Picture 1 (cartoon, rainbow, N blue to C red):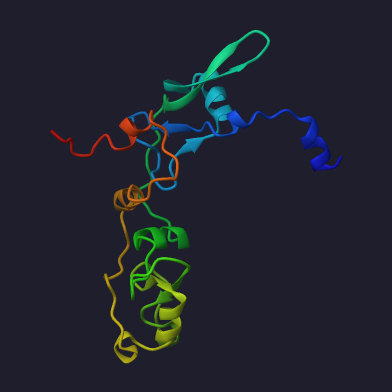
Picture 2 (tube, rainbow, N blue to C red; picture 1 turned 90 degrees about the vertical axis):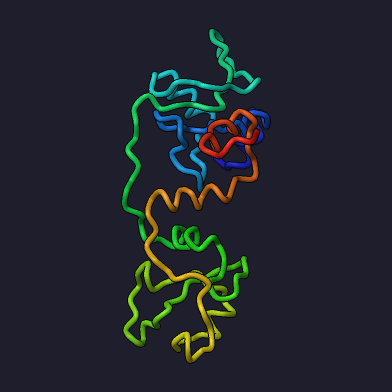
Length: 194
């Protein structure tokens, strides 16, 4: 059956599409900041029904079945603590997050690639200590030359980030939408103003 044809008959209220639940670990800290640990409202209700989470805050919107009415959770806390990973995977996304989504040569933000500080053609390896985020212009300008020969310098020396360091970097990039019920849990360890 054609998906467009089916979609015209399925009632999916727009108001229910955008009610994600912030997921907190058992210590009331988000599982991740970037991307922010969110579940669709359906997953949050299912987890609450199965007693896997505790609902801490709710939206004003309800979902109904013939016998039940449930307010949609906006913040849930896992009943069991999930131990955070100590090792940070060497991925393009984590590399860009470490470098704050900015070229490490000129500081521009935009379409990024990655560059080997010591070019692979000169024995450089693909590792945290030798790869940086770079804009296409700087990457092409440097080419397979050393920094000195290219007349370029790094804004910051590359190194492997720790899990907590990367988590803190993620806090610098809040999502486009932050529900008011989430704010107390996202920045609970920030310094309070008198």
